[in-house]
Length: 442
Image 1 (cartoon, one colour):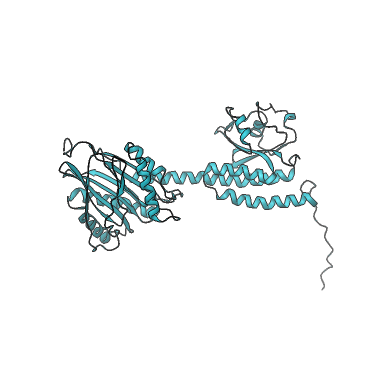
Image 2 (cartoon, rainbow, N blue to C red):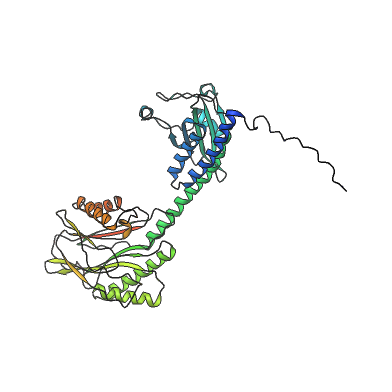
């Protein structure tokens, strides 16, 4: 049996306001669609919330060729704007508006807060809720407003004004901005999650690091700064403590890796090294050797670099006594502004060959000399040779040599020559003016 003859079916018809425009308007819509796809990719690449918000505004402006744009972030109550991200103002226009409070969501802007449906206005001044503009505000006639939602809750409102061709915003503009607002909500949510993860990772990392004890008569300062990437836990650590024989023990170290395993290995290694350092008044090289053998025997700790030092009384001065396990050299800063690295045999990292011999090194420490111990996150940059960044840190140290110790270490971390993609730890001690002596009460 033959199938019945197929009759031609009529083409489905779209409503007039949704039908694909033809001619120049159709080309504009096609261009907007491609631009929308590019825009979604662009805003999804941003991770920092301020950058995400600004990118959303500028992207929306580009999509509809608007001269001005803003994103008003709602207060928790949802009743007014607590932040206003603006784009498109010239320097002259920004200067003219200096001192004025940003809009809080009254008048026409408030209409979108109370009625979060897309809003198109051909003449702002004629809208019943309009209350006018403050003095020196740029002239604006047309407006397109769209609410931005995050997890089903209105996060804020996206406002666009003044198409550059002088025409009012149309249905195609509204649709493309509504679509962008949907992607914007996801990007904002991702950025907020990024901030939460980063803050949690940083808090976890800091909980693993010790609080420096009172090391009087020495002055001590330490800084830890997490990596820029989210959940990028690191293995950097520092430690310092008075030892039973009257010396000060100092440790700086870096476990290879950037995950929970590295952070846990760092905590275990730090605790083990502190116990050995306090229990055995032996040269640093012997303690590192014992630590390496212990780690090799009972743990699966990754490769670790470390510098272990003692600041010991030596006549009328102090003496730095140290050994390194593949770590960067200490940096010595003198009161007159001089700075130099204490280069010596770097040794091999922990976890490579426990039987490999390690060496000790000593250097005198006169009064008011600062010794800085740091991890490679402070100086490594993939585009630079390591010597270039070491020299940059040296120059930075000379510029701040006379600063109080807290200011010195903060300057080194704030202006570090690295690319910031690794966590960094820094510990500095400054010798006192007075000759060595056993601390009071010891």
